[in-house]
Length: 130
Image 1 (cartoon, helix red, strand yellow):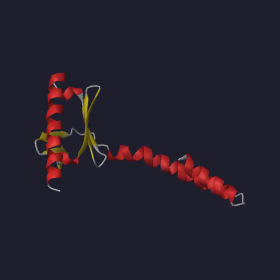
Image 2 (cartoon, rainbow, N blue to C red; image 1 turned 135 degrees about the horizontal axis):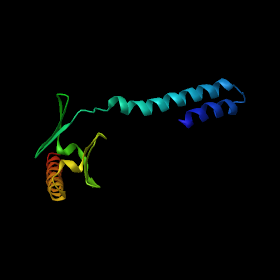
Image 3 (cartoon, rainbow, N blue to C red; image 1 turned 180 degrees about the vertical axis):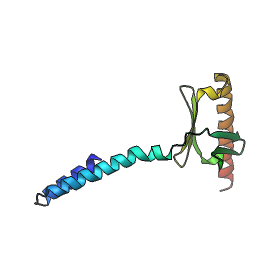
Image 4 (tube, helix red, strand yellow; image 1 turned 90 degrees about the horizontal axis):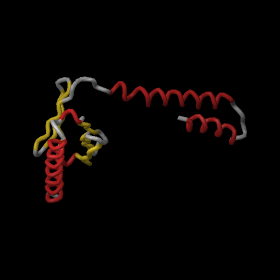
């Protein structure tokens, strides 16, 4: 954001002309970028309950009647962080499963182990088909 302002401002000064409108334009672009980066996630956020189904060969997610399916090969990483299960996809999306989705830590650990096995099997299958 500050980069757009500085680019306009310094570009005008380095060219040997001092045009205050360049700085104003850079500032305007900066505010537009700030508004976009703050607003876009808010517009895309879906507050409805999402259903995540984990099966041996795929993950499916359903929200507002829309279903999307991913293969385990689409999963970049599986992580645990402070009781949350984080399933990161290769397309930079992620599913964050809260600790309240599990009866206890043992159940979460079992699911992580099972998902890791499915992911590894998908990776082996992908390598075999190459």
